[in-house]
Image 1 (cartoon, rainbow, N blue to C red):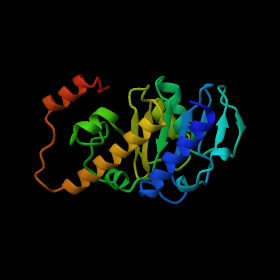
Image 2: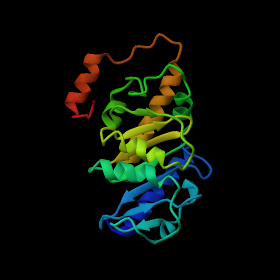
Image 3: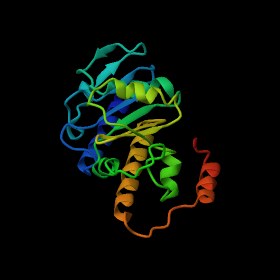
Length: 214
């Protein structure tokens, strides 16, 4: 994909997330690999609803900022996924309401944040690791992701928001939307006698769609 097309697609998808309330204000950040092996990244302090393709932070393959505005302060999060998961082509971080609300609950499985409600969350996300609270911009968030050794494509930052990696920007956006919708379903069903997918059903999905599930 050409640099110009990638810039347009990144801004278009970010605006779609903003317009549907999946992130707000100047929250959230997004990045994608370029054909040359560098990165395009949303600048610091910008709104997903008003990203300018010409002002995206542009890094070369060595990690040097070569043009555009200064990048998001959450660069350690993005870099951690690119460094530990070879198939990562894009990363999206949101402050989406339902996933953040779910992260504040006290009875969660930190190793598997989302309950097995639908096959689609399993297919698109695998297991989502719940990470503890960090100050925004803390490089320790990136270190925590690196500590997973590339085994997870998605993490949930407690009291903060989800971070999802995908093969390209469209896949990453689709996956983070699935995370938010599953968190919404989970909150809707709390206190009800809901039937989750059984372990054999989960395993069927994992096997059929070759999901990383460890």
